[in-house]
Amino acid sequence: MEDRNRSSSKCQAHQDAGSSRPATSAEPHQPFRLRNVAKALGPGLITGASDDDPSGIGTYSQAGAQLGYGIGWTMLLTFPLMAAIQEISARVGRVTGHGISGNVCRHYSPALLNIVVALLFIANTINIAADLGAMADATKLLIGGYGIVYVVFFGVVSVAAQIFLDYKRYVAVLKWLTLSLFAYVAALAFVKVSWGEALTGVLIPKITWSADYFTTIVAILGTTISPYLFFWQASQEAEDQRVDARKRPLIEKHYGAQKEFNRIRADTIVGMAFSNLIALSIIVTAAATLNAAGETNIQSSAQAAEALRPIAGAFAEAIFALGIVGTGLLAIPVLAGAAAYAVGEARRWPVGLARKPRQAAAFYAVLALSAAIGIALNFTPINPISALYWSAVINGVLAVPVMVLLMLMARRRDVMGRFVVGGPLYWLGWLSTAAMLLSVLAMGIGFFAGE
Image (cartoon, rainbow, N blue to C red; front, side):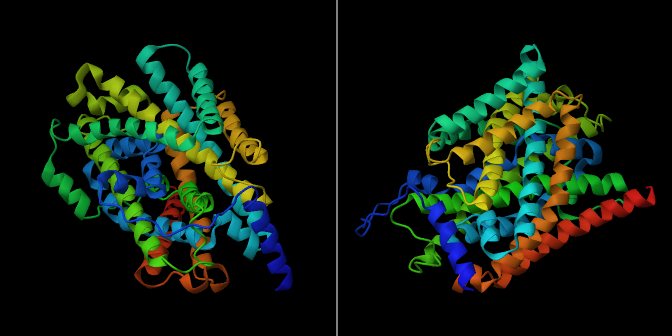
């Protein structure tokens, strides 16, 4: 126990290096303002927005084109499940003052820590590569040119902005680009949607026992319930607490815990609701346009853009490209940042996007390395849309062990103190884990059965 406490103190000393916490007075009462509400929506909203990254757009478009309205039920199912697992992740970060990797390094074996961090780094790097490829493909569709040039450009810009610019301002600008995704919501008013079939598809699961079907299910779950989202939201809660002189980890300062939990829940629910609304709109729009026209296998960005043609006409490709690029520029920093947090916390380095590069050089080096490998993978002959789909499948498979570890961690008193997760939230978290596991097993059985 003494060794563990010494290790924990060492981790804490590294994580808090360079930070100070001056004494503060009571915060004055402020009137209700919509702007204040928007500011309160932080890590959860960003997580939800980055969830609809190019990988998500590609996966939902492929699912809608391939399976039609009948796959809509996955969005109704995943909403409470993803909200629960993301809230648990956020609670771990806010209670302990450390991200998931930081807690693993304090309470689990080095071997398990290395496996978890390696899995996340691999999954995130593959996802970055797929997102960059799709962004380049969409831009090439719009203005022509060489795709690999756009890959390098977007990769370098994303990393450079994250390292050298104020990240909060950077994200505030990128949030506006994600509004282009509402084109899919607006498209529902213009395309010929069979609302009876769409509603049935949302409310009544229609399951086909085949490997292809369950691979698509795993891809959908993998792009909505992704490992990088857990790590990112937990680390951002810890980061927000670390840079705010008025806050301490809740395990140290219990006062105001319920208020913080209420904020986390509202933030997470809004973020996940936004994510699933866009996802369902993409599925229904693709089903009404592509699937209805017999186009069930999307092989290019041009085909995916067809789903927007009823509303955007000749501008469909421009709207699609803007959505892919905008969400990609938001998601790549989250993917690379989550990998850097995981590696940095595991190695007990100073971490955090609020720190200057010279204060956290190793942290930013990992971030840049993940993006650089993602860029390099695009020099291989991969299909961008297929890469998006299969990166989602990989995320779905790798999410299972990470979710099991997260649920066990959230129940440990030596991790969470008096704030161990329990009640309906706890069981929803395990239900989310079970749903992911069952879908992966069903996919594996289908492949081995040769279906």
